Picture 1: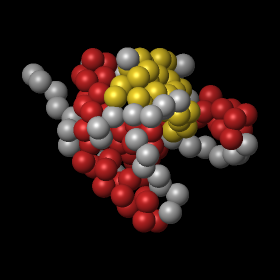
Picture 2: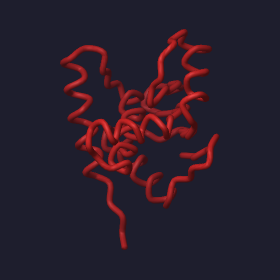
Picture 3: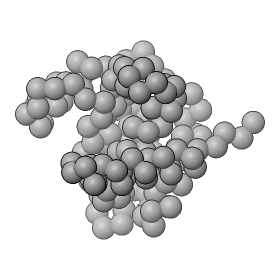
Picture 4: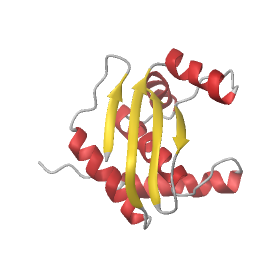
Length: 139
């Protein structure tokens, strides 16, 4: 099950389309959907989590808590909408594209992809691009 939760005045349009896409990402990695909770928040909310749980005094766009067991993907993914907006501007992409990148990024971590080394980051970026291309809205 995929749930979307909001700690600020923001809602994801077409939640069911995003949930289906995220489930397809998980299946494309030969994993099984467990319980994924996305929590959309602001910088202050995510900064507090970063300080409290990770002891990092920095702003970030995403923090994920991985509860995956075996091939069953589960976890809580906190996303700062403010960081996504700023990153979209910095990378000269749309907010929607950057949001999809971050949504996929958390799932890819749960699937075993890392991004701490340069080589791992390149693989992660390629996987993000691959998964963004899987997003389709039926009109």
